[in-house]
Image (cartoon, rainbow, N blue to C red; front, side, top):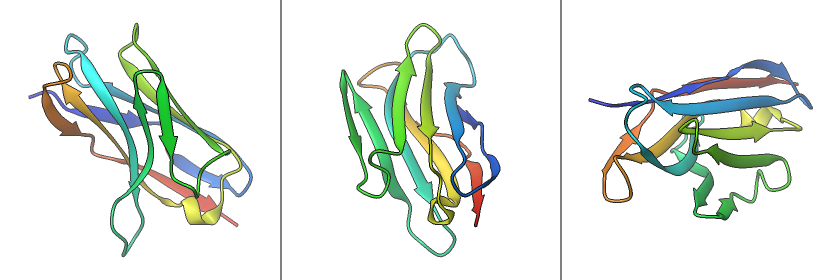
Amino acid sequence: QVQLVESGGGLVQAGESLRLSCAPSRSTFSINFIGWFRQAPGKQRELVATISGGRTNYADSVKGRFTISRDNAKNTMYLEMNSLKPEDTAVYYCNGLVGGPFGKSSWGQGTQVTVSS
C-alpha cells in the first residue's frame, strides 16, 4: 500500500523557517496532492494550505508566511514556512489521492514542528 511520507520537521526558534516535503513511499505512483494539515496537542486537525491546479488556499493564521507548492517532475509537495511562531507548533500531515484525481485518499505519518519562543 502506498503511503505519503513527510519530512523536514524539527525544532526551531520563533522567526525561523522550515520547509516540509511530502512524497509517496513508492515513487512510481502518481499523487494528486490535496494539501497540508496540522494537529496541535489537545486540538483537532486543521487545514493549513491546499493546492489544486494552479490555485492555492491558506488558513488565515498562516497567510503571508507559508507557501504551498508542488514539483510534478519529482512527485513531491512542499510547505515553505517562514516567520514561524510558537503557535505553529504541531504535527504536520500531508494528504493526497494515490493514482490520480479519483484515487484513494492517503495521509502521511506526520512530521513534528516545534517552535520555541
